Image (cartoon, rainbow, N blue to C red; front, side, top):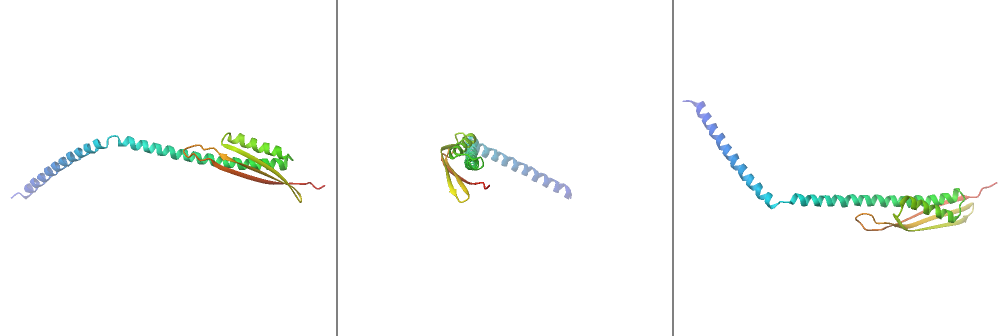
Length: 163
């Protein structure tokens, strides 16, 4: 009896049935894929639009945060610049106020609104203490319409020269 031939015929039958099974399975998958694609037509477009809108809002929020921090830093630097000008250059309160205003406006434009500047000179035992205080609101730029209040104060000491 030919054992090798019987084995070969058995393997051949298994291969054919496995091929039919894969063909039937692929037809079923194709049919199932067609049903899903008909019911979900346009879902990729909608998901893309949602993703783009989300990323735009996120990036505008980050830009608004960056501009808010920039405006705050400019107001702080302007207060220091006004106090420094009054101390080192011997300027008056009015000139220190003008320098702080000019510094803020040139660096921020219209980012800082309702800016108020107060300059006070106080006599202390060894000179004058100059305090420059700036306060205002940062304009809302971006998706969050919140105007952030900002305040800064700088103090410097002008010492009297001893001969």
